[in-house]
Image 1 (spheres, rainbow, N blue to C red):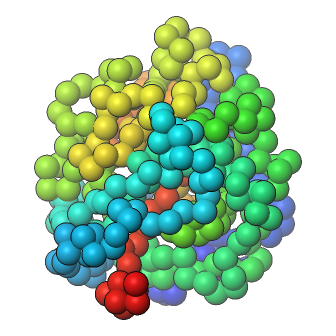
Image 2: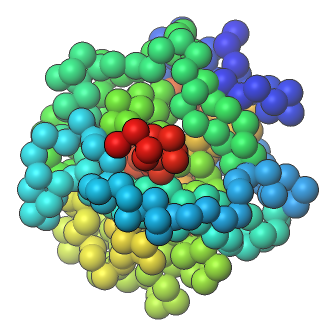
Length: 343
Ligand SMILES: [Ca+2]
């Protein structure tokens, strides 16, 4: 049994088994009366970084403004985008700088996060299509994908498998893959594939701490990514309201960035709603954390959340899980000073 690439003995998590055995799990949480019932709520308690661990996440300060000024192009090159206008007239690979800082976690206390680039949009169908066109590349054996919120490396294991063109197709009712629209978020993407696509793009999945830091606006501690105003269909894609009526269908999955008034402090769109987004963090034995609420996430029906947009919304799934409500968003490290010097 393969471990989930985490070196720490305290996170001896085994996440490769299901993928290795080909038992991809299709979880579909009910959004309408005729759909499968909501899955049992069996997720373990969220493992939060302890106060003593918070300080190990990242160094508190860095010369972020100078680094950006020195970089030339404002964001990393990203081979997953071959067109520059597919998402609202701009590249679906647009990224913004999330400057490092701190945010208050209810359990872990103050958590520090380093500066990073973060995709403005959720991972789109077009970006996954490009990854497929390039032969579905995966990281090499033992390649470090990144670190989790505790600073533990997460390494690729060659026994892990990614989805193919057939398994990328999800439940027809909500599948965005066969629709093929470039700017729809890719749902039914499992953790392994999300991690591989982000690696192909030159990035990685965000840590849970990074995701939440971006969502709450750092020290501002926003209740919603956009601020204090309540959640409304104008600010987030949720509650099957995407097409303006109460029924739930594929039409409720909107192109990424369709709710610009829900923009987060540093420019991310759809952090709340649209798709849950995989993170680099384990949420329990054989499980991984995803954040943000989904397009048909209905408080009270799916009882794990009362407010879709609350940054505390979390799922714990096996990494081979695919769901109509789970997608991904990539994060990118800032170049090191060595890399900058070489430019
Ligand atoms: Ca989202």
